[in-house]
Image (cartoon, rainbow, N blue to C red; front, side, top):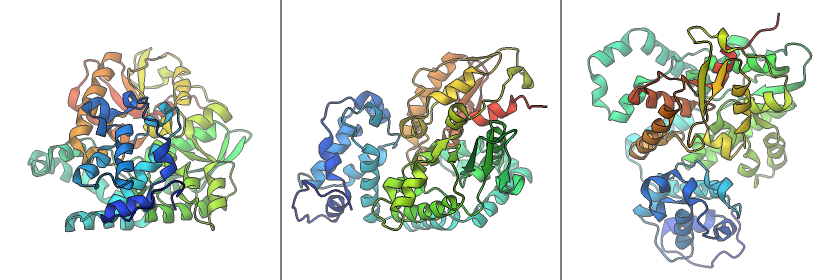
Length: 453
């Protein structure tokens, strides 16, 4: 239950307003001082200049609905759904308002009263309950996508113009899909991978759901990087989806069920750290304690879990033996190459992991790190945001690519799969003057890792 301290005693006639009153943490609503420090940090406010499209404005709308000063209508829902959930407002807030929690509570309330069309209902139920939580379904998805890519069907679809039947933004996303696989990290490496040399700590890797289908190579490279840095790596086979996409879409009960499964699985291993290589996943994993704070059966275990979650770059830099990296190891690169970095919003704003990736990039021999303007601003991916809000996502990406081009970097690195796809899309659409390749930072480092003899 949300905090009831000071909550208005109002009998709302509007069903959504009643649910908002029940769900929203009123203490957090009243903590907002309306100072405006969040405004320049908010991508949607910067794009629109509209107060309702800012964190301060959205909190004012939430409170007005709860206080009975307005009826939450379609415009109210539209402004909440326009939020990227990047949480850049939180580090900027002097009052430490938990905006991320408020927007998730609001979206959960909205979802309870949404009337989706039948196709949308079927799609949501299929993805959220039959695909993301089920390893067998994910393997089938990966195998199907791999067949689509390798059989020649993808080329046929593109040559015949069949993708024109879909909205432009979906056709664009299809054009930059990575190579899928039905063999994830466990199928390739097993459930245990020993440290190189004396083990520093015992860690467990969170492999993710889509991550282990669309970016299986990155998961494998993550394990090998961790081992090279001195960690014994466990990869529990029975782990499930983190629940982030569920939570961001208002399906909080499903997110809590997935969290409970993961907590049981990882706690049984009694590891020192739980490692994430996807900022979006890590941001929810590190807040499992908040997600399950009212569940007496999992409250303590969730706190145990959350305190152990860490990003791969942070773990390597702060706790590991940083391997040697040599830029000249990479084929087809000039002796010195420029690299830049796009922050994962959730890694930076929630997990506070902005510095470690930069430390690793700056430690590569013969590589020059170029800091991009607004690297800490959202790229527009935000989970499925670029699918459901293509216009705003596209506008944000336009500005991002303008800054990316000015770096003249050959590599655009990031630490989250959604950001990686968004940057690949931006590079494909805008074709910077200096040819640029988007990569996950783990893949970039792994490719240049000097193996001990």
